[in-house]
Image 1: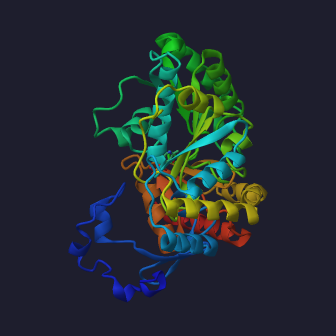
Image 2: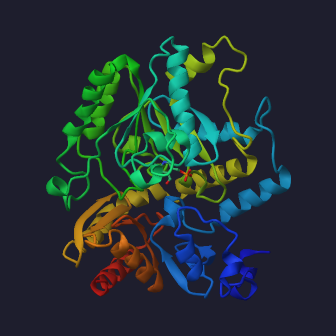
Image 3: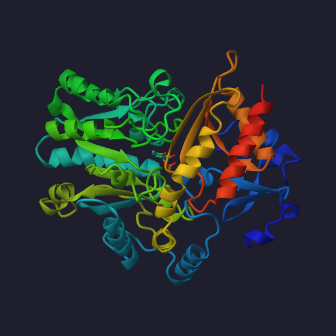
Length: 450
Ligand SMILES: Cc1ncc(COP(=O)(O)O)c(C=O)c1O
C-alpha cells in the first residue's frame, strides 16, 4: 500500500486502546500514549500529516535525522530501484559495489585522514563498534592494559551496553545494573550560572576539559583507551561546547595517546552548518560515529569512520586472516547504501550544509526572541539546533515541557523535549517563514502553560 493510500479510514485510530496494546513503544510513556495516541501517517518536505489529516510542521527532523526533508524523490527512487535489483547481499566474506562506493564517498566528506568506514544499522551500534575498535586498536599495539573508556555526564551514546556505560543520562541507566566496569566520566559543560543565553559557543568552560588530566592521573594515563563525547550534546538538551573545550580535549588525548571519539550521530550531515562537527571545529578526532542523516532516515544505517593509523594498525598490520571479529548481518545493507548514496548526492546538489550555515543567524535571532518568554531560563543554539530550557515545576519536573510538546503538537508544530528543555532541529530545507512559525507557536504556547 502506498503511503498516500494509507488514510485515517484504514487505520484504527485507537478508539479501542486494546488495538494499540501489543506494540511496546520505545522511550515512550506507553500507557499515556495509548490513551491519547498521536499517529503520523504521511510526510512530505517540512510536514507530517497526522491520522486526523492535520499538517504538523516538523521542527525536529523526525528524531534529528531527516535532514533533507521528507519524501525526497531521488532517495525514494534509489531505494525502489535497489530493492528491485538486489534486495540483500551477505556482507561477511562477500561484498557488493555500493558499500565500497559509499565508504569512498563518505571518506571524501571527512577532514584529514578519517578515511575508512565500518557500517552498522544505528547510532547505538556505531557507538559500540567505535568503543570496540578503540579497545582492539590498543590490543593490537600491545597495550591491552588500556581499557578504560571515558564518557561525559549528560552524554547520550545510544542504548547498547557500551554506549549506555559511557553515556551520562541517569534515567537511561537506572534500570540496568550490569554496565561496563572500566568506565569513568568527565563532568558536563552546562552552566546556567556562567553560560545562560549564550549565542553560539559559550565563552566560559574550556577549562572543564582539564578534568581529563585529573582522570589520567587518577587511573594512570596508560590505562585509558578512549574518550567519547558528542561535540554538541543533543539528546540531553543541546549543550554547546564552550570555546576551546574540544580543542583542549584533543590536545590532552594527543599528549597521553588516548583515542578521541566524536559521536556525530546528531551533528553529522549538516546539523552544525558543516558536513560534520569536526569540520566545523577544525579538529580531527581518531574515530567518528554517524547514523541518522546518513540515509535521511529512510533506511536505518550507521557508520564508524576511523583515521588511517587505526585501520593500518588493526587491518594492514594484522597477522590474522579475519582482522576484526565484529560485524552485523545488515552491515552495508544494499537498500541502506542506495539510500545513503542518494542522500549524500542530494545534500551536495542542493548545498544543504551551506544552507544550514546561512540560516544559522536567522535561526539564532528566532530562538533568542524567546529569551524573555514566560518560564524560559536558558536559550542555546548552534547551526540549526536549539535548546530552550524551562524552569521546572517545583513539584513536577519535566511536566511543563511535556505540556508544551502536547500544546505545540495541537497547534501544528512538532517539537521535542528532554527533561525541561525543548530541543529543536528542523530539516535543513526549512524556510524563514517556517522558522517564524516554530518560534511564534512556541511563544504562544509558553504564554498558555502554567
Ligand atoms: C549522539 C548519539 N549517539 C547515539 C545515538 C543512538 O542512535 P540510535 O537511536 O540510532 O541507536 C543517538 C540517538 O539519538 C545520539 O544522539
